[in-house]
Structure formats: structure tokens, C-alpha cells
Image 1 (tube, protein in one colour):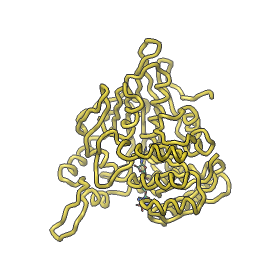
Image 2 (cartoon, protein in one colour):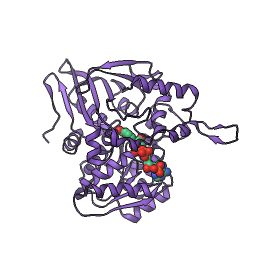
Image 3 (cartoon, helix red, strand yellow):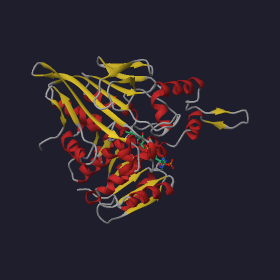
Image 4 (cartoon, protein in one colour):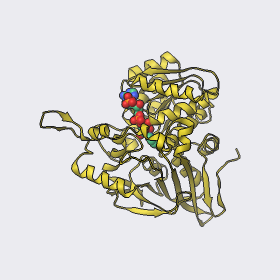
Length: 413
Ligand code: NDP
């Protein structure tokens, strides 16, 4: 049994993690939130109290922290006595936070792959460049490190494993992510613009025919027939989960598809072609050195401000094809989240909601010992059943559609 949680970061996803952790503080114990800007961490706690989200009376404290400083993270962990760290800061802080968890022997989890701010789209598999290099150290310390436990990556990896467990052989895993919501702004990204654009400016890597295939963004589009949101066009995109699922299911094709409207594609293309999405610094005529991508981030709406007026739904699905008893089988597992309902419950839009709730579910399973595996894992390496059952009860139910119909996915354990 592990207790007491430190949340790192105080952005959109951290807001959801804080509310859901508070709703389950009987299982998780003391709660702490640490971020670069103390006022943002304090605002998150204030919103938790505004909604009376704490299930039982308990501790919830804010701290200022530079998560790029391993020694500072380790000192805070020791000082406040937490046994679980949920890292939902920027992906640039993953390795320093992981190092601090290894040093102090506490459980670690994140929702995105580590990134070096000066590099975009490194060599696949991306986990091999940073996280997997720490596998031995993590195991030697007996530290549970769960990589990528948001929605995608995260729940979609769990679904892939759940579908694979229903088959003798897996032929393909296609993950489709559609946001059919509207924030009403001319242009905005649903999470950190810097991270959002970095996802789509590099090579699109997919795993097909047992090797990496390279494409350009928006080169390959396909219309998917989806429940709730209807037929939706999505484009083959690079994404974290392809880089672990391809290692765990090397004989299957693994692809990620993201939905984009024409307007997003137009604005993105103009910004990219002008060089405004570059992570490399430029010098202005006045001698000022600026990173174009950081300037674009500074002028776009803060994603956290989109939540109050956001309407519509998200739809994320795994389509998995394979064989069972010599016959072809195909399943779709999916979830739909509502932006307005997410805002009413936790004060965030649906994208942050779908990323934050799974991290708290994982923390509960670690606290209860169910997922406390004492080593580094990608999510599809864990038993999917307790996680899917728990998510069904805390706001993100999974549905399955196959030749037996369309129904809630629930396990007898
Ligand atoms: P935000 O940009 O809203 O929040 C990031 C937070 O991290 C901010 O509070 C920021 O502080 C803080 N931070 C950044 N650098 C440091 C540092 N050096 N020390 C301490 N705190 C720091 O991002 P989101 O909440 O939208 O996303 C959080 C994470 O979740 C990201 O890794 C993102 O990629 C991931 N994500 C995963 C999804 C999934 O489904 N798997 C979906 C959506 C997001 P400050 O406010 O001061 O800048």
C-alpha cells in the first residue's frame, strides 16, 4: 500500500488530476501540488475547495518547484513524505522528475513522452531515447514507473492490450482521436501550443509491415465511421503510443490518426511555412533572440481559458483487428467525453479531463498495490481489467463494439 501524492505542474491536466485525487483522497492520503508558479498551484487548490471536492478532510498543499532540478524535486518528496508522484508538468521535466523518484524510491507516472526542448521528432522508438534507458535503474530501485498514463497515450494502450487479450493474433491497431468540440475562438490549441505544434511539425512515424514508415503530416487522411460524433476525417500522425505498442506488438501494424478541421490545417500550414513553428532561435533586426514557436505560444489563447465556453464531445477509439480460433475478428473500444460536463465537474475542458482522470485511476491502483509493479512499464504491459473497471466508475467509461453489439466494457475479476 502506498499513500500521499505529489502532483507536478499546475496546468489544465493538473487541474483535473487535483480534483479527481481530492474526490479519492480517502484512498490516496495527503495531496500536494508543486509547480513553477506557486500562484497557479494555489489557484488549483482553491478551485478544489470551491467545488468541495475533498472526499474526506485532509491535507492539500501547494509548493513552488523547478521540476528541472532533480535535487529540488527529491528534497520536496522527502520533506512532504509522498510515495506517489503524478507528473503532469511539461514533457521537458520528465527525466529530472523520474530521476528524483528513483533516488527517493517513490512511484512515478506521467502522461506524455519526454522531450528535449531543442529537438523535434527524434529517432524512433521515442521511448528508447530517454525513458527506457532508465529501465535498469528503475528496476534496481524497485520503483514503479508507469509511462504515458493519460488518454492517448494511456487508455488507448490499455484498450489495445484488452483487445489483444481477446485474440490469438493481432494484425493491426488503429487509434483514432477526434475532438468534435468547439471553443469559439479564431484559433487555439487544446493544450500547450508549444507541445501541440511540436507533435505535428516532424516526420509522421507509423509501424507497418514490421518496420517504421515515414510520412508527412496531413499526407494520409481517412474517414472513420464513429459512434456519437459520426463519420470523421482523421490524418495519420506521429504519437507516443505507437512507439511502445510497436515494441510490444511487433507483428501488428500500429497507427495513430488525429482529427483536424480544414481551418486548423490552414492556420497550421501558414504558420509552419512562414517558419513560425520553428524551435530554433532567430535574431530580430533589433538584436533580440526569440524562438518563433514560443512567440506563437505567447500570442495564442492560454488553453486553460478555453474551458468555460467549450461545447461538444471528444471521441477516442481503438480499432483492433486480428484472429481468434482461425477466424478474423475486429473490435472497436471507445469513450466519449463532454466538454461542458467536464467543466462543470472539475473546471477544465474535455481534453484535459480525458488526460487527467486516467492518471488518478493509475495512482489509486498503485496505492492499492494492484499496479505497484516495482519496475518501469508502458501501460499495455499492465493488467487492463482493474483499470478499465475503475475508469468506468470515475468518469471515463469504456465501450466495446464487436459482432456481439455495442456495450459497456466491464470485467468480472
Ligand atoms: P500546461 O502547459 O497547461 O501545464 C504545464 C504545467 O507544468 C504548468 O503549470 C507549468 O508551469 C508547469 N511547468 C513547466 N515547466 C516546469 C518546471 N520546470 N517546473 C515546475 N513546473 C513546470 O500543460 P497541460 O496541463 O495541458 O499538460 C500537462 C502534460 O500532460 C503535458 O506533458 C502534456 O503533453 C500532457 N498531456 C497528455 C495527454 C494525454 O492524453 N496523454 C493529453 C493532454 C496533455 P507554468 O504554469 O508556470 O508555466
